[in-house]
Length: 110
Length: 114
Image (tube, rainbow over all chains, first blue to last red; front, side, top):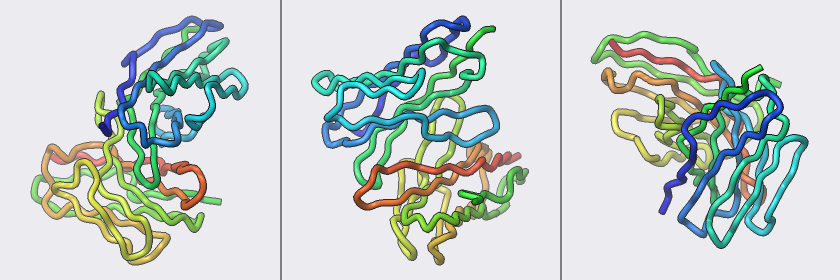
């Protein structure tokens, strides 16, 4: 019930393409769904987040789509750039409890 | 504004040795966390604290101890290091209640146990 599943494990996209990473959760008590971006040698940093009462949130080229009934959410990166190459973690939280997905390593080819 | 600072950044230990990782935050955050990151495993929670003087076990607490004597510091100890504890360790902090639980991470501490 506490697990967050994430796919794909790795993703290679051409510059200008769309990157899509999918996540699924089981526990309906989760009330906050953040995405973290991690560059090599750095700690993860918050990229974008959504609450379950919203179906979509967009910030620049990054969009979260949220499907409450299916208990799934996804990250779309439009016009992907080489600088977006990083590992992306989805997460689900309630209170102080936050559960991370296993991560997706994104490589954007120039 | 330093955020979350972890020391040391790198450490090599021999099996059976002990060590302490220090995490310091200057944001007056209530919550602090220790994670370990291993290839293909994502971030796994070791221990966490919801306030000064409190600690609680996470997903993978065995072989580790923690202390939070001061609000701004969260220490992670390994009493008898094992090769399985070779990993990158991340400290994070966040502020609650009422707001979204946004974690601020440190840069990580890479530990190798020989």
